[in-house]
Structures are given as structure tokens and as C-alpha cells.
Image (cartoon, rainbow, N blue to C red; front, top):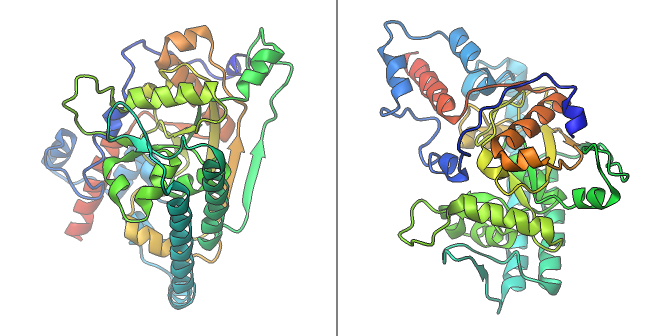
Length: 395
């Protein structure tokens, strides 16, 4: 990829301490759509003499702005044709899809229950990190194959009848992203330690489950949820530990990077799925990457997702989860396009500087996916949501 990056516009990168994956994870407890009175940026916003207009907010927080028929936060004024379509879908499509999704979820839970019966989970040094993804033999094979198939069925239930996938083939002569490549390196490129994807919606996880059945970072509470908890352990999710009194506790970043190195060296190990932006966007932008995900120095598989739409955008940006799921189930057809880039093999300089590694992968994904680079993140997203709530309360 070094040769390809020479075509991209230059970008200076400061060498500072790598960011830990825990940093973004520990900030996700507060609801996005509720104002946080302790946020200093929000206090500055509220202290201004005149409230910002919608146009000013959309210009400043462009990565989180919705452009579909349903408007800001999904509360826009709808034309009567859209209201008719919604009414029809609510009494026909939604009940069938809810039933179908519930059936698929329960069925896969039962499969996981059978596959994990009389089997002890794999445990990390932190006793609360446990999974069944390292189970071998027929158990792992059944969990993976049925999980991938049923995830695709779930996408079908949600209206994603076709998935448009494209990929750039890897040059087996070893010249795809190294100037001094070899066939041995090319073979190594086929064994990435992690999938690095842009983040647009909760649907991203369903697609990646259907294509590669990866592990990913999830909140501790997910492990205790009915049905979903066991499924997440079969996926091999790394649970976010808020705090630990153990002196040997490595933190989420340490566990994730160990998993990445393991997946790179062992083909049978579960691969990690990373969303280094740390939050979702409207799909037109790419936020700064957290460099903690690149500390291992292992090759990564960049994947670019996009959701073309006509009525409702599947992006989960500035709309509540319940409202978005209901409106999504009301759409007769939904679309997703996926671009798989060649495995990115880092140079020695990138291995020594995770921030440089993360930025180069980000620039490549933005270039290949026609995405706009943005310098704002989760903190600004919270301010934008709080400001929108304030404007709607005034109205």
C-alpha cells in the first residue's frame, strides 16, 4: 500500500502517545441523544446569547447530519405518500419482520446452547473475559457456519435482499502494498489480524458476521443479556471492563491486540473486527482513527461500507435507536454496498508508530471509498445531539 499512498495528498502526523481502545469505550455509557450538563463544550454552546440555527449546526457537525426523507432525528414533516407507505408497512411488513428476526435469534441461540453444552469457556487473565470462540472441532465449525448463514438471513429479514460486494484482488507476486514484496509476504497478507471498517450503523455488525464471523469489542452488560449474551460469547467478543482492582489487568486494548496478533499467526483463531472511528457517521465522512487498535503492528483488512437509500438512511447518526429500527423495518427494500481493499501490510515505520499506521489506513480508505476526512469525533457528536434536543424542545 506504500506505493498507493504516494498518490494520496500528503498529510503530516504527529508522534504522540497511542490512544487506548478503552478511551472511547469508557465514554459510551451516556445516552447520545440526551444532553450532558457536565460537557464543557455544551456549556459554551448554551452560554451563547442566541441559539445556533439548524443550518449552523449542520455545517459544523456535517458527519452526523441526516439527509433522508425523515429529516433531522427522524422527526421531519413527511409527505402524505410517505405516510401512506409507512401505514401499510406498519400493519404488514413490521409484524412479519419482527417475527422473522425473533425466530432467527432464538434458533441461533439454541444452536449456541447445544454447541457450548458441557464445554468450558476460554478465559483470559481477567476472569470476566470469557468466550467460546476458541472452541475447536465440530462445535466451532457449527457455530461459525450457522452464524454466518443466519446473519445473512437476518439481513434478508431486514430488507437487504442483495449485497453488492466488490474487492481488489491481491497481487500474489507480493507487489500489492510493498515495494520489496515477495510471495511469502503476499501469503502473509492473506492472514490479517483484524478487519478495519468504517462505522455507519448497527447493521455493520450483521454484515461482518455474515461474511467472516469476527469478534469485536462490546460492553460488559452485553454478556448478561438474554439470548444475545451467549451469542456474543460464541463470537468471542472482548468485553469492556470499566475498572479493575487487579494489578495484572491489561485493559481492553491489551486483550484486543493480543487477539489481533493471535489471529495473524493462527488461521484457526477468531479474527477481530474493529471500528477505529469509535462512533457512527452518516456514511459520507471518515472520522479520526483511534491508534490503540494498531498497536500490534499486524496486517489489517480494510473494508468500506455504504448504504445507498431512497427514503430512509440506514445510518444511525442523530436518531434514536427505537425510532430508527421501526422506520428501517418499514422500508420495503434496503441496500448495502461493500468494498474489500487488499490486506494492508504495515511498513517498519508504521509498526513503530501506531498513529502513523492508523492515519495511513484511514487516508487509504477515504481515498478508495470517496469519503471526506473529518477531524471531529464522539465528543462533538454528543454536543450536536444535545443542541438538536434543545432546538426541538424550544419548538
